[in-house]
Image (cartoon, rainbow, N blue to C red; front, side, top):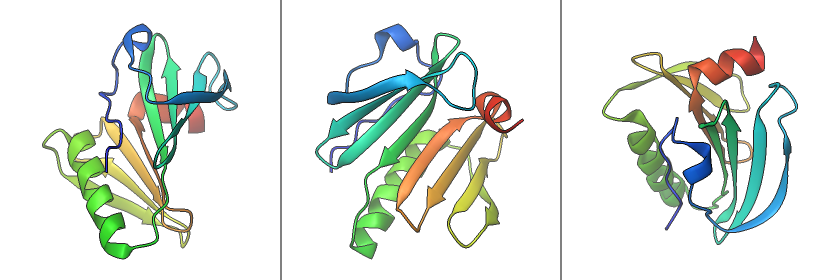
Length: 129
């Protein structure tokens, strides 16, 4: 699997393009934020930039095999964890919400759709108030 991996807070104007741009527009819940959705071999990835930096990434890369899901999630959580532990905060029956131990990052995994989101807590507060 070759998912594109990014560093949160990376300068927006230097982000590598992961695939074909299929949509872009303003974020519906965060004033001044901009979404770009790209087609990649595994599905789609959405990059959200705000204040000139990458603040959120959504991997819309559903898999059918439990072992493949576990492997992909392990890769993503390790990458975005930067050596920090992730704590599960909530399981709402649709997905799970996580906070990194240093409270600088959040993650959401929708097990119903098998989509994964990683972002900064600063941006999370703007989105959800």
